[in-house]
Image (cartoon, one colour):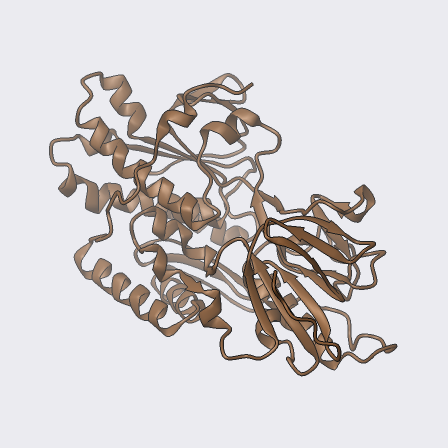
Length: 429
Protein backbone atom coordinates (compact mmCIF):
# COMPACT_ATOMS: atom_id res chain seq x y z
CA UNK A 1 0.00 0.00 0.00
CA UNK A 2 3.08 2.20 0.04
CA UNK A 3 2.59 3.49 3.58
CA UNK A 4 5.73 4.29 5.58
CA UNK A 5 6.37 2.87 9.06
CA UNK A 6 6.88 5.53 11.71
CA UNK A 7 8.61 3.92 14.67
CA UNK A 8 7.49 6.32 17.38
CA UNK A 9 3.80 6.27 16.40
CA UNK A 10 1.19 3.58 16.87
CA UNK A 11 -0.64 2.73 13.65
CA UNK A 12 -4.44 3.00 13.74
CA UNK A 13 -6.26 1.51 10.76
CA UNK A 14 -9.89 2.57 10.26
CA UNK A 15 -12.06 0.55 7.87
CA UNK A 16 -15.01 2.57 6.63
CA UNK A 17 -15.57 6.30 6.05
CA UNK A 18 -19.19 6.51 7.10
CA UNK A 19 -20.47 8.66 9.96
CA UNK A 20 -18.53 6.71 12.62
CA UNK A 21 -15.23 6.12 10.82
CA UNK A 22 -15.00 9.68 9.55
CA UNK A 23 -15.39 11.15 13.04
CA UNK A 24 -12.50 9.06 14.37
CA UNK A 25 -10.29 9.81 11.38
CA UNK A 26 -10.84 13.56 11.70
CA UNK A 27 -10.21 13.76 15.44
CA UNK A 28 -7.38 11.35 16.21
CA UNK A 29 -4.19 13.14 17.24
CA UNK A 30 -1.49 12.85 14.58
CA UNK A 31 1.31 13.36 17.08
CA UNK A 32 0.25 10.15 18.83
CA UNK A 33 -0.93 7.97 15.95
CA UNK A 34 -0.38 7.23 12.31
CA UNK A 35 -3.94 7.14 10.95
CA UNK A 36 -4.89 5.09 7.89
CA UNK A 37 -8.44 5.30 6.59
CA UNK A 38 -9.67 2.67 4.10
CA UNK A 39 -12.93 2.76 2.17
CA UNK A 40 -14.31 1.23 -1.03
CA UNK A 41 -15.37 4.73 -2.17
CA UNK A 42 -13.36 7.94 -2.26
CA UNK A 43 -16.31 9.90 -0.87
CA UNK A 44 -18.47 10.09 2.23
CA UNK A 45 -22.23 9.66 1.65
CA UNK A 46 -24.89 11.48 3.65
CA UNK A 47 -27.27 8.52 3.61
CA UNK A 48 -30.38 10.19 5.15
CA UNK A 49 -30.88 12.09 1.87
CA UNK A 50 -30.38 9.18 -0.52
CA UNK A 51 -34.13 9.03 -1.12
CA UNK A 52 -33.98 12.57 -2.57
CA UNK A 53 -31.37 11.45 -5.10
CA UNK A 54 -33.61 8.48 -5.97
CA UNK A 55 -36.65 10.74 -6.53
CA UNK A 56 -34.80 13.43 -8.55
CA UNK A 57 -34.75 15.99 -5.77
CA UNK A 58 -30.97 16.25 -5.47
CA UNK A 59 -27.96 15.30 -7.55
CA UNK A 60 -25.57 12.83 -5.89
CA UNK A 61 -22.80 15.41 -5.51
CA UNK A 62 -25.10 17.30 -3.12
CA UNK A 63 -24.89 14.50 -0.56
CA UNK A 64 -21.38 13.19 -1.23
CA UNK A 65 -18.06 14.76 -0.30
CA UNK A 66 -14.51 13.77 -1.16
CA UNK A 67 -12.76 12.04 1.74
CA UNK A 68 -9.44 13.57 0.75
CA UNK A 69 -11.06 17.00 0.81
CA UNK A 70 -12.58 16.42 4.25
CA UNK A 71 -9.28 15.34 5.79
CA UNK A 72 -6.51 17.31 4.13
CA UNK A 73 -3.23 18.98 5.02
CA UNK A 74 -2.71 16.66 7.97
CA UNK A 75 0.52 14.86 8.69
CA UNK A 76 0.63 11.15 9.44
CA UNK A 77 -2.70 10.56 7.72
CA UNK A 78 -3.20 8.27 4.73
CA UNK A 79 -6.30 7.34 2.75
CA UNK A 80 -6.47 4.27 0.53
CA UNK A 81 -9.27 3.30 -1.85
CA UNK A 82 -9.66 -0.44 -1.29
CA UNK A 83 -11.91 -3.38 -0.43
CA UNK A 84 -10.98 -5.22 2.75
CA UNK A 85 -11.50 -8.96 2.26
CA UNK A 86 -10.10 -10.51 5.42
CA UNK A 87 -8.79 -9.64 8.89
CA UNK A 88 -6.13 -11.84 10.48
CA UNK A 89 -6.64 -11.08 14.15
CA UNK A 90 -3.62 -13.13 15.27
CA UNK A 91 -1.09 -11.51 12.92
CA UNK A 92 -2.77 -8.10 13.26
CA UNK A 93 -3.10 -7.72 9.51
CA UNK A 94 -5.83 -6.79 7.05
CA UNK A 95 -5.93 -8.11 3.47
CA UNK A 96 -7.31 -5.95 0.67
CA UNK A 97 -7.51 -5.89 -3.13
CA UNK A 98 -4.46 -3.57 -3.19
CA UNK A 99 -2.30 -5.44 -0.67
CA UNK A 100 -2.05 -6.27 3.01
CA UNK A 101 -1.40 -3.95 5.95
CA UNK A 102 -0.42 -4.46 9.58
CA UNK A 103 -1.96 -2.49 12.43
CA UNK A 104 -1.43 -1.70 16.10
CA UNK A 105 -5.08 -0.80 16.55
CA UNK A 106 -7.95 -1.63 14.22
CA UNK A 107 -11.24 0.30 14.16
CA UNK A 108 -14.00 -1.38 12.17
CA UNK A 109 -16.66 1.06 10.95
CA UNK A 110 -17.97 -0.78 7.90
CA UNK A 111 -21.60 0.17 8.54
CA UNK A 112 -24.46 -1.93 7.26
CA UNK A 113 -25.88 -3.49 4.12
CA UNK A 114 -29.43 -4.27 3.03
CA UNK A 115 -30.96 -7.23 4.86
CA UNK A 116 -33.13 -9.48 2.67
CA UNK A 117 -33.64 -12.01 5.47
CA UNK A 118 -32.41 -14.86 3.29
CA UNK A 119 -34.91 -14.40 0.45
CA UNK A 120 -32.82 -14.75 -2.72
CA UNK A 121 -35.61 -13.86 -5.14
CA UNK A 122 -36.31 -10.58 -3.36
CA UNK A 123 -32.59 -9.83 -3.28
CA UNK A 124 -32.36 -10.52 -7.02
CA UNK A 125 -35.44 -8.69 -8.28
CA UNK A 126 -35.96 -5.77 -5.87
CA UNK A 127 -33.99 -2.54 -5.64
CA UNK A 128 -32.18 -1.49 -2.46
CA UNK A 129 -31.25 2.10 -1.59
CA UNK A 130 -28.16 2.04 0.63
CA UNK A 131 -25.65 3.78 -1.65
CA UNK A 132 -25.43 6.50 -4.29
CA UNK A 133 -25.17 4.01 -7.22
CA UNK A 134 -28.30 2.24 -5.90
CA UNK A 135 -30.17 5.56 -5.55
CA UNK A 136 -29.20 6.46 -9.14
CA UNK A 137 -30.42 3.05 -10.33
CA UNK A 138 -33.75 3.75 -8.69
CA UNK A 139 -33.99 7.25 -10.19
CA UNK A 140 -33.31 5.88 -13.67
CA UNK A 141 -35.81 3.03 -13.20
CA UNK A 142 -38.60 5.40 -12.11
CA UNK A 143 -38.11 7.68 -15.12
CA UNK A 144 -37.57 4.80 -17.57
CA UNK A 145 -40.81 3.16 -16.42
CA UNK A 146 -42.84 6.20 -17.41
CA UNK A 147 -41.06 6.47 -20.74
CA UNK A 148 -41.85 2.77 -21.34
CA UNK A 149 -45.45 3.18 -20.19
CA UNK A 150 -46.00 5.68 -23.03
CA UNK A 151 -45.23 2.97 -25.58
CA UNK A 152 -47.22 0.06 -24.12
CA UNK A 153 -50.72 -0.68 -25.36
CA UNK A 154 -51.51 -3.37 -22.80
CA UNK A 155 -53.28 -1.66 -19.88
CA UNK A 156 -52.28 -4.32 -17.36
CA UNK A 157 -48.60 -4.14 -18.25
CA UNK A 158 -48.69 -0.34 -18.19
CA UNK A 159 -50.20 -0.35 -14.71
CA UNK A 160 -47.55 -2.80 -13.54
CA UNK A 161 -44.85 -0.40 -14.70
CA UNK A 162 -46.57 2.48 -12.89
CA UNK A 163 -47.00 0.62 -9.60
CA UNK A 164 -44.33 1.06 -6.93
CA UNK A 165 -44.09 -1.15 -3.86
CA UNK A 166 -41.94 0.06 -0.96
CA UNK A 167 -41.26 -2.63 1.63
CA UNK A 168 -40.44 -1.22 5.06
CA UNK A 169 -42.29 1.49 6.99
CA UNK A 170 -39.33 3.04 8.81
CA UNK A 171 -38.07 6.58 8.09
CA UNK A 172 -36.56 5.56 4.73
CA UNK A 173 -39.76 3.90 3.49
CA UNK A 174 -41.99 6.71 4.76
CA UNK A 175 -39.83 9.45 3.22
CA UNK A 176 -39.54 7.64 -0.10
CA UNK A 177 -43.29 6.99 -0.27
CA UNK A 178 -44.00 10.66 0.45
CA UNK A 179 -41.53 11.82 -2.22
CA UNK A 180 -43.02 9.50 -4.86
CA UNK A 181 -46.53 10.64 -3.95
CA UNK A 182 -45.53 14.27 -4.42
CA UNK A 183 -43.99 13.43 -7.80
CA UNK A 184 -47.30 11.85 -8.78
CA UNK A 185 -49.25 14.90 -7.65
CA UNK A 186 -47.08 17.79 -8.83
CA UNK A 187 -44.46 16.65 -11.35
CA UNK A 188 -45.43 13.65 -13.47
CA UNK A 189 -48.76 15.00 -14.83
CA UNK A 190 -46.82 17.86 -16.46
CA UNK A 191 -43.98 15.66 -17.72
CA UNK A 192 -46.31 12.99 -19.13
CA UNK A 193 -49.58 14.69 -20.15
CA UNK A 194 -50.46 11.80 -22.48
CA UNK A 195 -50.36 9.29 -19.60
CA UNK A 196 -53.10 8.78 -17.02
CA UNK A 197 -50.91 9.40 -13.98
CA UNK A 198 -53.82 8.44 -11.72
CA UNK A 199 -53.04 4.85 -12.75
CA UNK A 200 -49.80 5.17 -10.75
CA UNK A 201 -50.07 3.38 -7.41
CA UNK A 202 -47.70 3.64 -4.46
CA UNK A 203 -47.88 0.84 -1.88
CA UNK A 204 -46.06 1.00 1.46
CA UNK A 205 -45.79 -2.38 3.22
CA UNK A 206 -44.93 -2.66 6.91
CA UNK A 207 -44.59 -5.90 8.85
CA UNK A 208 -45.62 -4.43 12.23
CA UNK A 209 -48.90 -2.84 13.41
CA UNK A 210 -47.72 0.73 12.73
CA UNK A 211 -45.27 2.87 10.79
CA UNK A 212 -42.05 4.35 12.24
CA UNK A 213 -41.49 1.73 14.94
CA UNK A 214 -38.59 3.67 16.44
CA UNK A 215 -40.71 6.78 16.99
CA UNK A 216 -43.68 7.65 19.20
CA UNK A 217 -47.21 6.40 18.57
CA UNK A 218 -48.31 10.00 17.99
CA UNK A 219 -45.73 10.54 15.26
CA UNK A 220 -46.56 7.19 13.66
CA UNK A 221 -50.26 8.11 13.45
CA UNK A 222 -49.44 11.51 11.97
CA UNK A 223 -47.19 9.95 9.32
CA UNK A 224 -49.93 7.44 8.48
CA UNK A 225 -52.48 10.24 8.12
CA UNK A 226 -50.19 12.39 5.92
CA UNK A 227 -49.32 9.50 3.60
CA UNK A 228 -52.98 8.52 3.25
CA UNK A 229 -53.82 12.11 2.29
CA UNK A 230 -51.14 11.92 -0.40
CA UNK A 231 -52.75 8.78 -1.82
CA UNK A 232 -50.25 6.17 -0.59
CA UNK A 233 -51.77 2.71 -0.05
CA UNK A 234 -50.50 1.49 3.33
CA UNK A 235 -50.41 -2.16 4.36
CA UNK A 236 -49.76 -2.86 8.07
CA UNK A 237 -49.05 -6.24 9.70
CA UNK A 238 -48.01 -7.32 6.25
CA UNK A 239 -45.05 -9.63 5.54
CA UNK A 240 -43.72 -10.12 2.03
CA UNK A 241 -43.18 -13.79 1.20
CA UNK A 242 -41.68 -13.55 -2.28
CA UNK A 243 -41.25 -11.49 -5.45
CA UNK A 244 -40.66 -12.78 -8.98
CA UNK A 245 -40.08 -9.47 -10.76
CA UNK A 246 -43.75 -9.05 -11.62
CA UNK A 247 -45.83 -10.06 -8.60
CA UNK A 248 -45.29 -9.35 -4.90
CA UNK A 249 -46.57 -12.31 -2.88
CA UNK A 250 -47.88 -11.40 0.56
CA UNK A 251 -49.17 -13.47 3.47
CA UNK A 252 -52.72 -14.88 3.33
CA UNK A 253 -52.53 -15.32 -0.46
CA UNK A 254 -52.56 -11.59 -1.17
CA UNK A 255 -50.50 -10.14 -3.99
CA UNK A 256 -49.62 -6.91 -5.79
CA UNK A 257 -48.62 -6.76 -9.43
CA UNK A 258 -45.62 -4.45 -9.82
CA UNK A 259 -42.42 -4.17 -11.82
CA UNK A 260 -40.86 -2.03 -9.10
CA UNK A 261 -40.17 -3.23 -5.57
CA UNK A 262 -37.97 -1.02 -3.40
CA UNK A 263 -36.57 -2.87 -0.39
CA UNK A 264 -36.25 -0.72 2.74
CA UNK A 265 -37.19 -3.41 5.25
CA UNK A 266 -33.99 -3.61 7.25
CA UNK A 267 -30.22 -3.66 7.38
CA UNK A 268 -27.53 -5.89 8.83
CA UNK A 269 -23.91 -5.31 9.76
CA UNK A 270 -21.31 -5.45 6.96
CA UNK A 271 -19.12 -8.13 8.51
CA UNK A 272 -15.59 -8.73 7.22
CA UNK A 273 -14.28 -12.31 7.27
CA UNK A 274 -11.84 -13.24 10.02
CA UNK A 275 -13.99 -13.27 13.15
CA UNK A 276 -15.25 -16.33 15.00
CA UNK A 277 -18.93 -17.16 15.28
CA UNK A 278 -18.94 -16.24 18.98
CA UNK A 279 -17.61 -12.76 18.12
CA UNK A 280 -20.82 -11.97 16.21
CA UNK A 281 -24.39 -11.35 17.32
CA UNK A 282 -27.22 -10.38 14.95
CA UNK A 283 -24.61 -9.95 12.23
CA UNK A 284 -22.80 -7.30 14.28
CA UNK A 285 -19.51 -7.46 16.19
CA UNK A 286 -19.90 -7.86 19.94
CA UNK A 287 -18.24 -5.02 21.85
CA UNK A 288 -17.89 -4.09 25.52
CA UNK A 289 -18.83 -0.75 27.07
CA UNK A 290 -15.65 0.78 25.64
CA UNK A 291 -16.49 -0.34 22.07
CA UNK A 292 -13.66 -2.84 22.19
CA UNK A 293 -14.36 -6.12 20.41
CA UNK A 294 -14.77 -8.83 23.03
CA UNK A 295 -11.68 -11.07 23.30
CA UNK A 296 -9.50 -8.70 21.23
CA UNK A 297 -7.33 -6.15 23.02
CA UNK A 298 -6.67 -3.92 20.00
CA UNK A 299 -9.79 -4.21 17.80
CA UNK A 300 -12.72 -1.82 18.10
CA UNK A 301 -16.07 -1.63 16.31
CA UNK A 302 -18.28 1.45 16.00
CA UNK A 303 -21.50 2.46 14.25
CA UNK A 304 -23.91 -0.02 12.67
CA UNK A 305 -21.39 -2.86 12.85
CA UNK A 306 -21.09 -2.70 16.68
CA UNK A 307 -23.36 -4.60 19.07
CA UNK A 308 -23.01 -3.51 22.69
CA UNK A 309 -24.46 -6.24 24.90
CA UNK A 310 -25.29 -3.87 27.75
CA UNK A 311 -27.64 -1.87 25.48
CA UNK A 312 -30.93 -3.70 24.74
CA UNK A 313 -30.82 -5.12 21.18
CA UNK A 314 -27.75 -3.01 20.42
CA UNK A 315 -27.80 0.68 19.53
CA UNK A 316 -30.04 1.88 16.67
CA UNK A 317 -28.37 1.45 13.29
CA UNK A 318 -28.64 5.14 12.44
CA UNK A 319 -26.31 8.12 12.04
CA UNK A 320 -26.73 9.47 15.55
CA UNK A 321 -25.17 6.58 17.53
CA UNK A 322 -22.44 6.24 14.89
CA UNK A 323 -21.37 9.88 15.22
CA UNK A 324 -21.42 9.70 19.02
CA UNK A 325 -19.38 6.50 19.06
CA UNK A 326 -16.85 7.94 16.62
CA UNK A 327 -16.37 11.05 18.75
CA UNK A 328 -16.15 8.98 21.94
CA UNK A 329 -13.55 6.59 20.58
CA UNK A 330 -11.37 9.42 19.25
CA UNK A 331 -11.49 11.12 22.64
CA UNK A 332 -10.51 7.92 24.42
CA UNK A 333 -7.68 7.20 21.99
CA UNK A 334 -6.32 10.72 22.33
CA UNK A 335 -6.28 10.39 26.12
CA UNK A 336 -4.91 6.88 26.05
CA UNK A 337 -1.65 6.01 27.75
CA UNK A 338 -0.06 2.60 27.81
CA UNK A 339 -1.10 0.28 30.66
CA UNK A 340 -3.91 2.63 31.75
CA UNK A 341 -7.64 2.10 31.42
CA UNK A 342 -9.94 3.98 29.09
CA UNK A 343 -11.40 7.15 30.55
CA UNK A 344 -15.07 6.22 30.65
CA UNK A 345 -17.57 3.78 29.13
CA UNK A 346 -19.68 4.86 26.17
CA UNK A 347 -23.13 6.22 27.01
CA UNK A 348 -25.53 6.84 24.16
CA UNK A 349 -27.58 10.05 24.33
CA UNK A 350 -30.77 9.84 22.32
CA UNK A 351 -31.11 13.32 20.84
CA UNK A 352 -34.33 12.49 19.03
CA UNK A 353 -35.54 11.17 15.68
CA UNK A 354 -37.42 12.61 12.75
CA UNK A 355 -38.97 11.83 9.38
CA UNK A 356 -40.40 13.97 6.61
CA UNK A 357 -43.47 12.95 4.66
CA UNK A 358 -43.47 15.77 2.13
CA UNK A 359 -43.87 19.49 1.71
CA UNK A 360 -44.73 21.11 5.07
CA UNK A 361 -45.20 17.63 6.55
CA UNK A 362 -42.82 16.01 9.02
CA UNK A 363 -42.68 14.49 12.49
CA UNK A 364 -39.98 15.01 15.12
CA UNK A 365 -39.55 13.22 18.43
CA UNK A 366 -37.20 14.93 20.89
CA UNK A 367 -36.55 13.84 24.50
CA UNK A 368 -38.88 16.43 26.04
CA UNK A 369 -41.27 17.41 23.24
CA UNK A 370 -42.68 16.38 19.87
CA UNK A 371 -43.38 18.35 16.70
CA UNK A 372 -45.45 17.77 13.60
CA UNK A 373 -46.43 19.61 10.45
CA UNK A 374 -44.73 22.75 9.10
CA UNK A 375 -42.56 23.47 12.16
CA UNK A 376 -41.30 19.88 12.25
CA UNK A 377 -40.56 20.13 8.52
CA UNK A 378 -38.47 23.29 9.06
CA UNK A 379 -36.57 21.59 11.91
CA UNK A 380 -35.99 18.51 9.74
CA UNK A 381 -34.59 20.66 6.92
CA UNK A 382 -32.34 22.65 9.26
CA UNK A 383 -30.90 19.56 10.96
CA UNK A 384 -30.17 17.81 7.67
CA UNK A 385 -28.73 20.94 6.12
CA UNK A 386 -26.21 21.59 8.91
CA UNK A 387 -25.34 17.88 9.03
CA UNK A 388 -24.25 17.79 5.39
CA UNK A 389 -20.48 17.74 4.96
CA UNK A 390 -19.11 20.77 3.12
CA UNK A 391 -20.34 24.33 2.57
CA UNK A 392 -20.90 23.72 -1.15
CA UNK A 393 -23.17 20.73 -0.47
CA UNK A 394 -25.27 22.80 1.95
CA UNK A 395 -25.67 25.63 -0.55
CA UNK A 396 -26.65 23.27 -3.39
CA UNK A 397 -29.15 21.35 -1.25
CA UNK A 398 -30.73 24.54 0.12
CA UNK A 399 -30.98 26.08 -3.37
CA UNK A 400 -32.68 22.95 -4.72
CA UNK A 401 -35.13 22.86 -1.82
CA UNK A 402 -36.06 26.53 -2.25
CA UNK A 403 -36.65 26.10 -6.01
CA UNK A 404 -38.72 22.97 -5.46
CA UNK A 405 -40.77 24.64 -2.74
CA UNK A 406 -41.86 27.57 -4.90
CA UNK A 407 -42.01 25.87 -8.30
CA UNK A 408 -43.09 22.30 -7.46
CA UNK A 409 -40.28 21.17 -9.71
CA UNK A 410 -37.56 18.54 -9.38
CA UNK A 411 -35.07 19.74 -11.94
CA UNK A 412 -32.75 16.72 -11.99
CA UNK A 413 -35.12 14.27 -13.69
CA UNK A 414 -32.32 12.95 -15.88
CA UNK A 415 -31.55 9.40 -16.98
CA UNK A 416 -27.78 9.79 -16.95
CA UNK A 417 -27.01 6.10 -16.68
CA UNK A 418 -29.93 3.87 -17.75
CA UNK A 419 -30.86 1.00 -15.47
CA UNK A 420 -30.77 -2.33 -17.30
CA UNK A 421 -33.55 -4.73 -16.36
CA UNK A 422 -31.87 -7.57 -18.26
CA UNK A 423 -30.16 -8.86 -15.16
CA UNK A 424 -33.53 -9.30 -13.45
CA UNK A 425 -35.20 -11.48 -16.06
CA UNK A 426 -34.69 -14.90 -14.48
CA UNK A 427 -35.43 -16.37 -11.08
CA UNK A 428 -32.32 -17.55 -9.31
CA UNK A 429 -33.91 -20.09 -6.98
